[in-house]
Image (tube, rainbow, N blue to C red; front, side, top):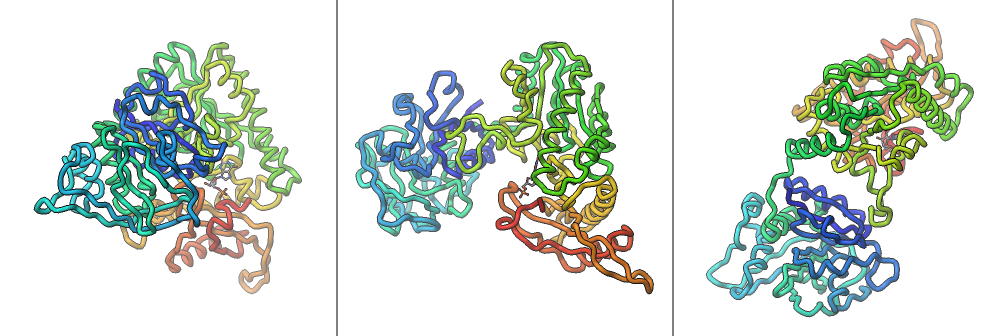
Length: 556
Ligand code: XMP
């Protein structure tokens, strides 16, 4: 399968470059900027993108790419630092700007009426407002020309840089300049090497998708063949080869990732080989264990080990009020029970351990994987001694580690996972314990579960203001939080103290930042009324109107 390799120099937007190209149905891989470009790494690669970076090419901290980059014959696209890196490596000069340039900047591209090589013309299809994305994907040979005159494109690019090219590397020519007077688009005269000072991967960059498509299709000649069906076929073959007839144990949390990983193992291997373990900690959402069991059974699970361990969790949490103390106790107990139960299963020594780690879990947020090649999810499953031991023994399987969340959802659909599971909002590892402020008890969990279930049921039942989907599907994450205060109210003629519940609903792309969901007031009022009318102990409902930052999504 055709592949675009992305050398990561630590930019915040490296993952976004990859995301945008996968949206064009082309497979991408991100590797550290200084990774060795061995024949193995370059197998299937049709082009290489050099990412941005918080570093400067003239400071000692920046990663230096394997210089085979410039002799391997593959098309290169340098983005921001990536362009500066190429310039510096190939004999040009990069120097600091008097003032950092950030945000939308006008760029003007001027093409001569004749004399441009074909490949340069194909690259410039991305800038031509007259060309739709579909023509660029189809490999349009060049921008539209008006009567042989020079062609000029002006558009708003998105910049974030503190350095600029003060001398181009030999063989490069400038075709575009920012309104602030700096080189913005450079192309080599004879090699397939291209450079953009701005970030086409950022959604505010005009023609950004088209520019990436022009490189990927027009220059690299990639085929749009990255589909979940293809991925599934490839994955099935490699999983079957790797695992052979050994048993595989998958730790299931009930969320989308582990359920899809379970579906994948059940479809790819003999279901008799596949052991699924799920722990009911008592801190789950209403009917979670029933839902998880039913959906995995429907997918053909034969060995489903449900560990009922709520009593152990409630006893360990007794008297604990501070959020960090609760998280630590939950994490430690989770690992202890998991190890105990796994050894109880009596699986042979050579069993494989599987988990639903995603591509984004491997990318250290903010620093990029160039800074740390294989960072793992900060989830209590991942850092356990059991997982570490299996990783070291080469018996850890992470079949989703090349996928983004929305790709996992597509794979889940392809594998026949219930739509309700696929669309389920994220749920934190420590569960309701971080949604009950202060001490956690079974009674408080039961109360919160009831109120939360009503809230979620209402969101699923109600249409979004635009009417395209349910409120639940429009919201990224919604849940109820039980506050550690009581407030006064009246029941009949009697003064009564009730518990206070906070409702939270946010929109987000990835949970890193989030906006408050602007509910129609009518919906909020009706939902709150139903909760206070149904759940006896809740006397008051509030709505959390804090975005992230400064607040976090969860309350603890
Ligand atoms: P915050 O509260 O940090 O949450 O804004 C961002 C996203 O992460 C989830 N979250 C967790 N997930 N273990 C998890 O597996 C945790 O300890 C944890 N804390 C928060 C949260 O639900 C949201 O989706």
